[in-house]
Image 1 (spheres, rainbow, N blue to C red):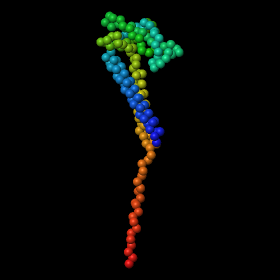
Image 2 (cartoon, rainbow, N blue to C red; image 1 turned 135 degrees about the vertical axis):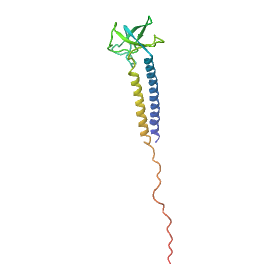
Image 3 (tube, rainbow, N blue to C red; image 1 turned 90 degrees about the horizontal axis):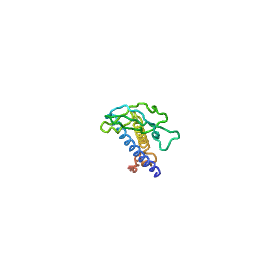
Image 4 (cartoon, helix red, strand yellow; image 1 turned 45 degrees about the vertical axis):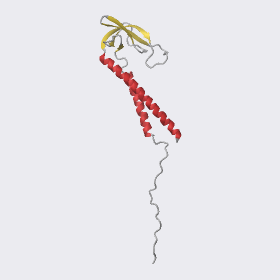
Length: 167
């Protein structure tokens, strides 16, 4: 049946997309891990709370979300960093202290300790699990809708009648 071919092709395309997204988020996760292992920790001070969308938001939320803008000092020079995403109830306010991780070669590249530690690996695992589940479904249903092959007869063909000599 031809109509079953389209969902199968679509399933393969979606499976490829999911694996591609898992690879991208896996790369981002490894970059984050590499940054954290090479980073140096400093104590930063929250100097402002800036409006930022929450993680995964595609439009402005109804309730404003805030991200801390932090100042930290490296070798006598002050740097500023604003968290990538806002939260509805920030844990720290202006004047509060937070731990900042920064790249010792490029101190302007920083992030708050724990930022992105859970979300990126979780998204990676989700895309991977969805791709594997879809692959299992595609493999298990690969014969659905196919016409069965013609079977060979297991009975012996009839042989011509034997001639009997009556004597």
